[in-house]
Amino acid sequence: MAQMTLSAQVRTEKGKGAGRKLRRDKRVPAVFYGPKAKSIMLSVSYSDLQALIKSTTSENIILKLLIESGENVEARSVILKELQTDPIKPFYYHADFYEIAMDKELTLNIALHLIGTPAGIIKGGMLQHVKRDLQVSCLPGNMVESIDVDVSSLDIGDSVHVKDIVLPDGIKLLEEEDEAVAIVVAPYAAAEEVKEAVEEEGEGKADAEASES
Image (cartoon, rainbow, N blue to C red; front, side, top):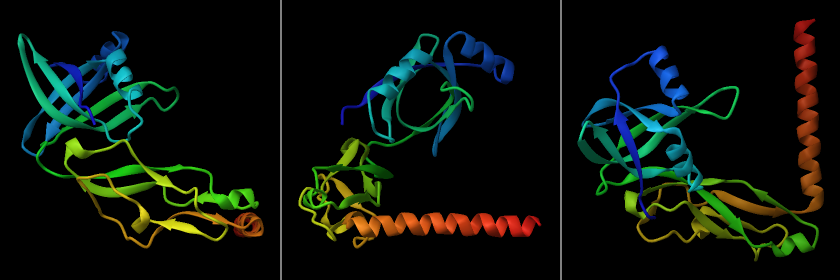
């Protein structure tokens, strides 16, 4: 995966007032830190951060952070550890950048993407996506946005498990191999699951009403 870059400027002012001023200027308050790095308060361009996030579908964004302080520019490899958004509207509120070493493995969750139409669907079966991501270990440079899982051969009653997934080179599995990822169930089985869920919800409401009375 090609590494992206983002420019960040060192800031000295802190507090709610300083944060609001940055956001009015279309910048996002941020912080850089790491296991062996001194914490540095930063700000980044809102539009640059937005463009970076929209350029990938991965939940794990690794980038080269260019930290600017006056005329000095220092490049650091980081992962976007946390991105806080406004609770009311979709607006970036604060970003945390965590320093990583490109020669040390990371533990990450990578999304599983189902591809193909299961053979059992044609017979009336229903595809259930049971597990949506996979915990793995890899060097930052070997990370991928997602892992494809071909489900086209699944008939009714068939399933694909973690052990069936072909991992890209350089990525090591950290999950139980027998765990199901996807399964094609018969129509009546799916209907029974929905019925059971409705009944459980009804029982829960009844219990709650009884305890209130």
